[in-house]
Image 1 (tube, rainbow, N blue to C red):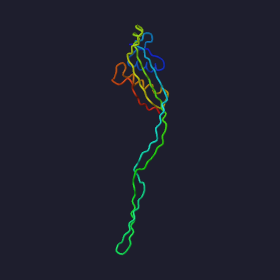
Image 2 (cartoon, rainbow, N blue to C red):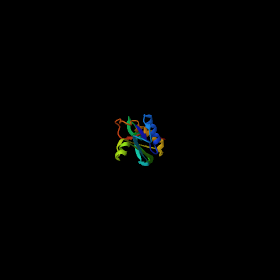
Image 3 (cartoon, rainbow, N blue to C red):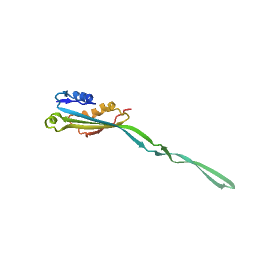
Image 4 (tube, rainbow, N blue to C red):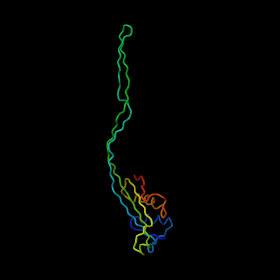
Length: 166
């Protein structure tokens, strides 16, 4: 079976498929690989929040008067009062990027013979992160999809990948 690479990600995809034993043949491909990608800014607001922690909220003083024998007695008892103290944190904006890659592998012979597009395999992967440069995260995203090609592992077609790209 031979493969035909296309445009932006063709080097990464081609190398991945060659490692799996496929042969790159631009003249007589068995299938075509179509790759779509999207990067968009994703911004959301985290609203202010208040948490309550137990702590000292004051002191209480109780005064007692009385007689002991023929003498006046004054007694003062001090105690600390505990309760819940509110701590408020301000809201803030989070700026991140949504990255999405879709791969469609199409039977080239079927396309040539009948003009019909027969999808042999497809997958989609997405992630959120701090970089808008798809080239930084593409190797991880492509590996997530192409590691199971040509068979399915039982994972869904749409994968959500967490990548620490700080």
